[in-house]
Image 1 (cartoon, rainbow, N blue to C red):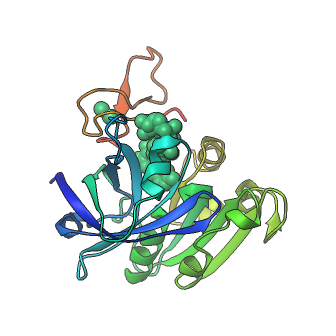
Image 2: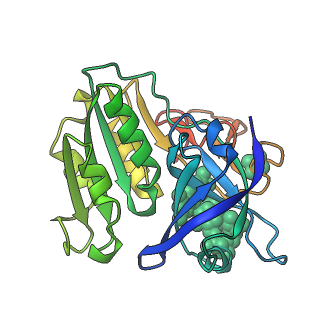
Length: 261
Ligand SMILES: Cc1cc2nc3c(=O)[nH]c(=O)nc-3n(C[C@H](O)[C@H](O)[C@H](O)COP(=O)(O)OP(=O)(O)OC[C@H]3O[C@@H](n4cnc5c(N)ncnc54)[C@H](O)[C@@H]3O)c2cc1C
Ligand code: FES
């Protein structure tokens, strides 16, 4: 069910350059039950009418709280970053399909690959998989040391966690492609990735024939609910170029082989 709610901001803290962690509380959390659905957030400025889609990083139904982690790219999220505890944030959600947790089974292995600001929704995913008895290997890539986020959250649950930075200022030098080349990606029972387009392509090229490889896609959004077709991506293998899928309600999670990245 899609809800709209004035959620209460419990905290809104800068955790890296331009990156903020916001804790929200509200009834909507009771509807959150799969990782990487997203919230469509109204910016608290009347001149900015389009909502901003932001992934749910963690949720806890007991305390009715959820966490979003966002990077300020333009004036909209800059306004959100100024909001303080006690203020209300107008939110629609939870939206989107979320990561499919039915694919790996207890005692199987899952690979999680995250890049930059694509890592937040993978926190809940990693926790949920581990709670199901699945061993989780996590590969994360960031631009540089100050941009590294969520290391302690992932290391708390992952069987193995490897971090790379583009400039080598933290962890290994390079991108997650380097780390993927060191393991047998096809040996994992499920693969999940969220990050920049180039990273998703690198994951897709290594998982073409994998039955359970999933990516989280981004697209410019307007309605966020499947009505306006602003957010379409093309279907892989469609020679007519006419078939499209909507990221907001048919995604944001797709099989790597399903869409043109
Ligand atoms: C499903 C989904 C989940 C996302 N999750 C996160 C997240 O967890 N953390 C995070 O930092 N960012 C996330 N993004 C990207 C985020 O929505 C944009 O960076 C943000 O909307 C930019 O807003 P702004 O006000 O900072 O920039 P502005 O430049 O002021 O935004 C202008 C307009 O462009 C849209 N826009 C700009 N960039 C994007 C983009 N990459 N994707 C979609 N719309 C965009 C905005 O919604 C807005 O309508 C997600 C995007 C999608 C589609
Ligand atoms: S944003 Fe309107 S259909 Fe997806």
